[in-house]
View 1 (spheres, helix red, strand yellow):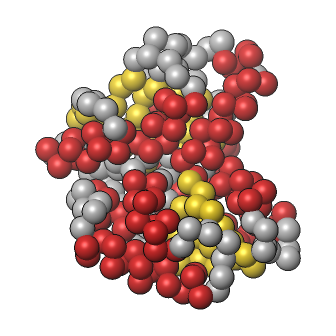
View 2 (cartoon, rainbow, N blue to C red):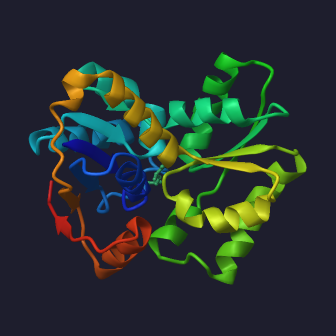
Length: 261
Ligand code: DGL
C-alpha cells in the first residue's frame, strides 16, 4: 500500500492526484485532524508528529510513504529518512523541479503556511539548482482554515486570496508554486487572482508524477504495492465537517475512520 499523511484533509489532494496518475493502487491515508494545523507549530513538534504518523502507516502495511504536507516536508524529511528504511517522498522537491522547468522569466512565487515560508526551504532548493532565479514567497495562514471550513467560493475567500497574492503579482512572477497541499482546491480563485499568464504549479500533482516515475524505474518496490483499488482513510478526529470537506477535496464519496493515537 502507498501510505500518505497530512496534518488534515488537504493531503487528500495528493490522494486524488495518485488516483488520477496511478489508478488502482491501494492507499492508506492518515489526516491528523486532531492536531491540525501544523503550519503554526514548531519544527520539533511537527517532526514528532511526522514520525508518529509514519509509524502508524507502516504498521498498517504501507510500503512507501508520501508526506502530503509541505509543512512536514520542509522540516521532517531528514528525520524520517534516518529513522525508517523504506522509500519516503516529500512534496517540495518535485514542485521545485517542475517550477524550474516552467519559468521563462526566472521569477517564481511560492505560497504556503507560515512554517513552510519561514523555513525558506523553497528558496534554498530553487537557488541551489539555479542561483539566478528570483523567488518571492508569501505566507497565507488563513487559507488552510478556509479550506477545512469548506469556504471555497465565498467572496471573503476571494478577497483574502487577492490580498495575499498582491505582493507576488507586483513582482511579476511567471510561475506560482502552491506550496501547501490544501491550496489546489482553491486553484480556480488563485489562478484568477494571480492572472492567466502565470503558470500555477501544485505540489500535489508534482509529487504524484514523481512517484509514478519512481515506481516505473523500481520494479522490486512496485511489486510490493497492492492494486485492488481499495483505499482506507484514517483521521485522528472525526466531525461531519471533515467528512464534507474530504468528499469535496477528493471528488468522490469516502468514509473516514477515526483512530485515536
Ligand atoms: N497541508 C499542509 C501543508 O501542505 C498544511 C496544513 C497545516 O498547516 O497543517 O503545508
